[in-house]
Amino acid sequence: MGISTRDIAVLRESFDCHTIEVHKHKVLAIKCGGYDWRLLDVQDGKALVSIETVIEKRKYHGEFAGVTWETCDLRKYLNGEFLDNFNASERAKIAEMKFINNDNPWFKTPGGNDTLDRIFLLSLEELVRYFGDSGQLNNETPEDDVLIDDRFNPLRIAVNTKSKPLYWWLRSPGDSNDYDESKLSPEVRGRSYATTAVDEYGRI
Image 1 (tube, rainbow, N blue to C red):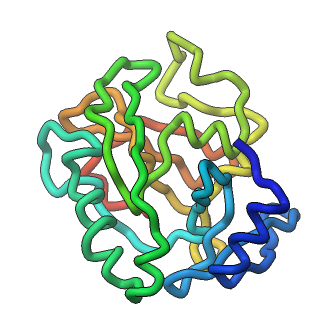
Image 2 (image 1 turned 180 degrees about the vertical axis):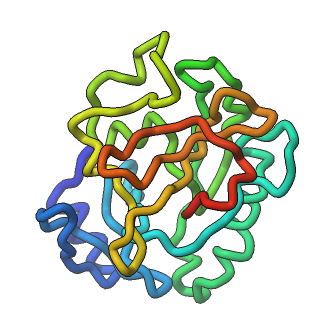
């Protein structure tokens, strides 16, 4: 894991790369599909990027039913209709990668099968890897539904184009596959909740 000068040079050959300000720090981003994508990591020559602003409101799944990331409506949308919004040249640069879908670390809710995706949501593990880790994923008996609450909260806040903080989805399961998935609250504390997968207020 890590981003080298060589990695950045290779990215600049294929993408419009520029710097953006995130939490008063300059970070590298690429322009693709009309969006700014923040560079998080480079692995095996493939860049892991995260869209910098919340772009739309979507349900994780359209009905109360047993669901995982593999079977949810949101995954189908992201790798279908949303992906189709990119032009042919851009789609050719979006690599398919294998993603591990771990069980919920607190409730042991099954994460389902690993998946091959081109567009995806971050997992709880990826959240703390790239946006600060205080070890709270290892808390086996959380006191309440506030499952991650630490000094890195401000780094995890997602905002829309008007800088308004909003809830945003993770792909990790919540406390039940029947109707819950994980999302982050819009509060300054950016707390992680297990929440209803059909909640209309989840954002991507």
